[in-house]
Image (tube, rainbow, N blue to C red; front, side, top):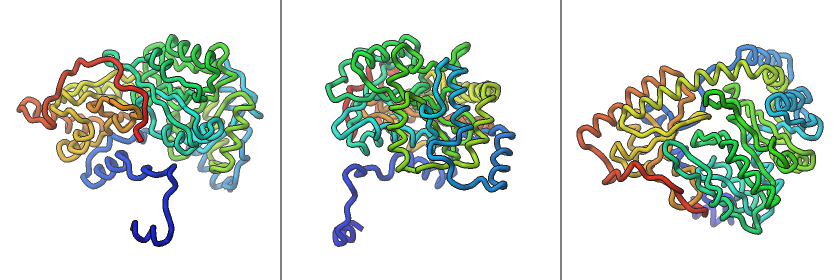
Length: 424
């Protein structure tokens, strides 16, 4: 293949070099080839609102299948604006300050392309969603990852590390809360500290809030940094319908922000997909108007699934971290005898018939904790129950003294897990 490419004068651009098969693809293929239960991907197996599905079916059959407006149907933009006002007290003009996108993934890519020139720097918190580094690379920018600190059974902001990561080239801070892959919800105090830094250094903020309705802490709800003093005018808020309504395949997302920032995002977005999702948009507009009741029921189901998986991981001999939001539980695999999460995940399908993802795949900075593994709980309850039973083989191995990769090491380590840098 390489010889053929060279003979034809073909080569891949540097910006996509190394963006081939990932650990995610490898683990998904392992699940397929071994018949293992796939707790690696965050693909929900839960139901969607029946009336929403019927609305979409009716729209398709009625012939609503051509291009929507490039900025999104007015009904959905109005519903998004009403949602932001109702939940966060933020006023956005549906005309000019709300943009519908092909999922949050496109929104994030378009925002990075809109705000960053080659050589600029973007701050994100490590571990981070893998699209962030790819978006930075496509824009010719550099992602500077600030590791979250391990704090007991959760993760915390290291404000000193954030300040140390800033440079004259820093243009954007990319904030993800609720956070994937850790399940962390940034606290009000942490958000205030981040906001102070962004105002002080005139940073533009892209905030990824796709798990905004999936916060499980008693009495807690998602807070958006855009609602803090002086932050609305420098922040674009990204969210989507996929996680909220279990419709990830529909790829309908949106951006809210001040008109100049949203206009810049739209300028990039129009040359990515232009527009999509016609039969979904007006149906989602109606569903978003009554999202609170639906989301409350979904949170209850996911909280139950999280607790089931966390308890099962602990019985299997792993050390689960607290997941306050989202789809995933992090686990320390060292108590089972593994020092390396990649090796653990590659052996787990044959050993227990379960697939997980090594958290090191989400780290950009050096010094990632190799012993962290991510498990998904957005699956059917019967699937999780079966997975928990299968994972008990790890406890059996541990009792018998079996293990892998040498000494497991201490399970009490805490503190920063790495320094800002590039994974390459």
